[in-house]
Length: 324
Image (cartoon, rainbow, N blue to C red; front, side, top):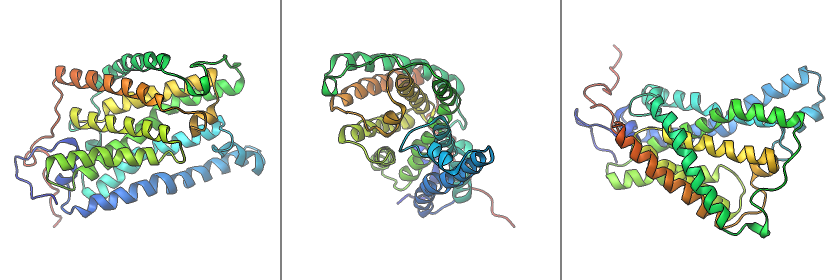
């Protein structure tokens, strides 16, 4: 388990829990408590509010329930409620961070501590180049059932417009919420359990990546491994760059592209549930994107001389003073 810290200890991102209240068990408690909040408590609470709102607007119980059931047929209202529920991971993670570790929530963003906005916007641009590499590979590999990469253009309807509005406004928050949960709090929770550097870093990357893939529910093996690969690369980026900016930028663009293609050429429900045909070749496309992005984002972080370690414990991250 984690050894006592010296005043000159400078934690990497995944070691930040070691700077808070002593007790390795706090990270384990948080690793259980936070997913319960995000995947059970908050969705129920937000879903009830949405249901009451729809009923108050004059909809029948059957119609309101249909709109909120994202597994049967995804609607703009259902997607909005889902996105808000996942975006609520950010304040939930902040609450657990403070309550269990007495660390300010800003340490979830980076070792800065805060979102390093200039690097984040640069990463948005870099993610486009990485996406181009992914699309290039996707054009070369066989498609499932001999299908086309892009099908016929869908009609632009009022529902399409509503979906587009939800995606533009809420998808960035949803993607950021998932990153604050998996690459944020859970990365710090797993990474702060052991003092062995390789073991701590490996667990900090693999643990959240596996949970991230499993959290998407029932899925085919290629889709699971595709999401696992994304989680691993995102976890490596967080440790290498000292913050969530690169992972959030890649996640936001991926979701924009996935939902954008579904709106234009596919089916939103099928895209959300990953119920369509899948192929092992999709992993090649994901790896082309992720590895390209990993190289570019790491290289730019070095050019920008981003800090990958927090300040010394004795300087800024000192343990909270005991109350008299």
